[in-house]
Image (tube, rainbow, N blue to C red; front, side, top):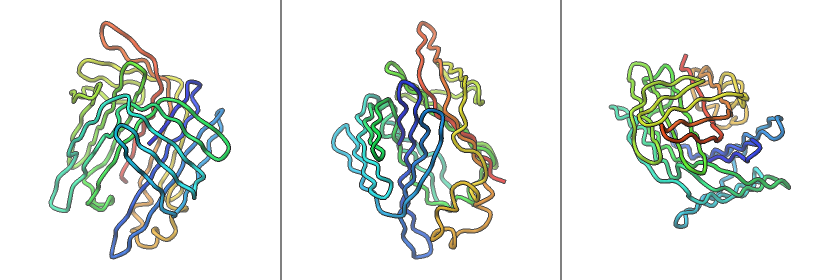
Length: 246
């Protein structure tokens, strides 16, 4: 789940449950950028995620975070990958959200997004070389995209809750059927190998995972976006990333 304020302050929250080799663990993390300053923290304490109608409530005492995501977009589901070892199921719970968030003593309000991924394939065994993902949200429109390239390739866009063909995906432009998104003023939120950025805070889980997982390289940005829908243009914030499986 995420939230970006009108001024561009950004919070991205991850809440995960892992089951591997008979071990079950919870993991929650916060990646936050306020006034251009980025920080991250994580917790192995279980968070509470509750859906009530069109609202998702999230509480993570270990992160000192509490918030609510009120749906102002649509839902969308897709099976991104199916193979002999398992699946990657993507459930976009809210293509757009009105978010109220409290982080420590700081309050944030803005537009956001919420999704749930179910992955039953060990991530280091996914037939993937490069993944591009991102989301644009404004009061009028939303655009989400997935571009998976490798031994197995697939791509799709979701424009205002409806599946659309993805025609181009780069760090500067996304072209989908019915809409073109152009991005500028990109601010890096996190960049590097997972072994250096994410895994150091997951020591209990890190011991169970192969070293190749730490070599996966991630680059994540928050950018300004202008969405051209043909007869209308709208501005909003974009969170997007590219991930390389080495």
